[in-house]
Image (cartoon, rainbow, N blue to C red):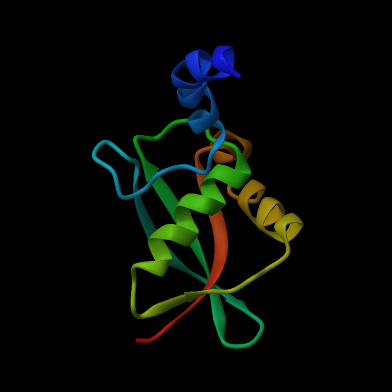
Length: 110
């Protein structure tokens, strides 16, 4: 037990790296999105998300960042589309952008 107490301060940064991306901390990636012309069933529309700094991120990290950004926007709501559909629409943007953008449906007020 004593050894664990000594190791805890060393392990915390490693465990934190496994957590979901932080968006409300200084230096966190900025997230922007733009509405596309493609509708989504139920009154939604596909949006493209762009992340600054532009760097490769896993699909799950991009989804987490985009969901957190939308949660702070009172005029838009995230639509829970299947993960496979998000991956497919994101790949439709071209392989060059496959790990730096995200396509996801939103329902936004005008």
